[in-house]
Length: 627
View 1 (cartoon, rainbow, N blue to C red):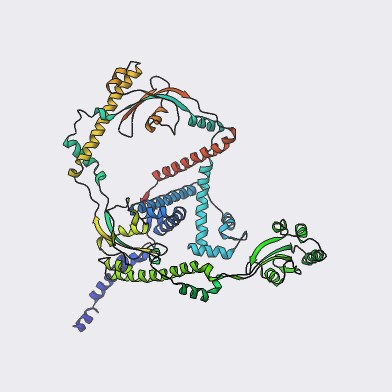
View 2 (cartoon, rainbow, N blue to C red; view 1 turned 45 degrees about the vertical axis):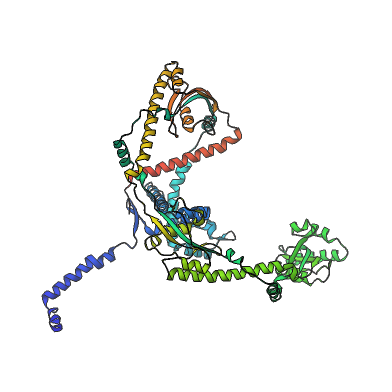
């Protein structure tokens, strides 16, 4: 059979067919690998692509910046997958905006020369050492950031070209001094008003909500009735603090530890000294001669402190007679330190000592000899230290064993709790927005709502909550996200529609009242019928007023003309308001010293708005695809 196959493959037709098969692989199979892009695109902006690698790099950079700036608060947000998706989309939108700006800059003919790029790189503080450009540091930083030098130069060229346009946009806005003072006066303006608050509750009588109304509202707002997924967690917690309370250390054990570690309870000899420093300057020989001359004056009875004030280059210590305060071995320059500890007695003065700072003359002013604390003084500290060490040893041993058992017996935490000698605790049902305090840690929440724990019903790995503090969890109960049935939410919808219709009825009544007020008719009887009274308020400000924000917003849109000095307003609490402008009070003048600062703020706000609108306009005209 094998021989027949071999013979069959040698024929002309067989070779032709085999050739076609090979070609099909080349053009359809292997060729597709050869011709395919090496990188997957995250988005396409006109003819340019934003790669997944670019998106991932920008995402990680932005996430790192947010984590360093906001810490645990941001970590808690990242436990929500929906937030992370939104966060990532925001990063991609920024990259798209940068790409659009780059394309616009190129279309405008903006360019950056090689000399400008080189100058910018040399000036970057990230690549400098001791105030100067350092090539080794430059290559090391690039390597750490994942750039080759030529890639970084290309990146800089694109970034600098783009910034030419963005800086032009941001720098083109300005605010005149007159505009600034006018804006300030408007902001400080107050208004006298009177207003009515009309309760919607008094209009509910006679309002009917049909079953059809309820069903129509349900269908139109069905996403409002989606529930969040919820879990109940069983958890076992272990902390080193819980273990240390049960550990007993005897006095004999403490004393034995003290004897074995006596050096830990011994304080080094400390010395206090004063010095006169003569810096090398341009002529070391001359500096040494000056130091020798000062030393001669000291040996001839000169006052050390006064000579330090007169001659010492260390101006800070010179003000205190050359005093350097207390120090122990290892804290000073080696040559300086050796000379100081060689002085035998207080008030002894050294010869001229050379260090990397210059020439010193050292005077020993005091000595604290080496001391060993007696056991009785440190006994409590020793016992606490031993307790802590033993608790940590027990903690790590238990944690390791608990992790093994949690993996080996994944369907229960009972054995894990037995090792820790604690009970298995269980939380109430909770969503990601209502986490109980006992398990409200970002990494616990992330595990709690993970597919592995929900679908596989297994124990978590060890979750570190802090130093020497861990937790193991499993999902005890789970409620999937769902849409509530109409029957469940009918009473809720009925109340919503009743409130909406009552507010609408109150608004219609207020509108008829407004017509009468503009016609200067007496409306007191209408107000009495609804038990509503005018309230007056003088000098209402744009913010910080006790008047409802909705009424304040409407008040500052009114004019003193009687045709437009009043307005009906829907209030946030479901009631209706009617506000009437009585008088406009001019705002205070802006102090001349504050004009420039406010001008800059207003210009910055305008520039940011202009920049955002420019990007939006570019995006509307561009062909943008997000994959």
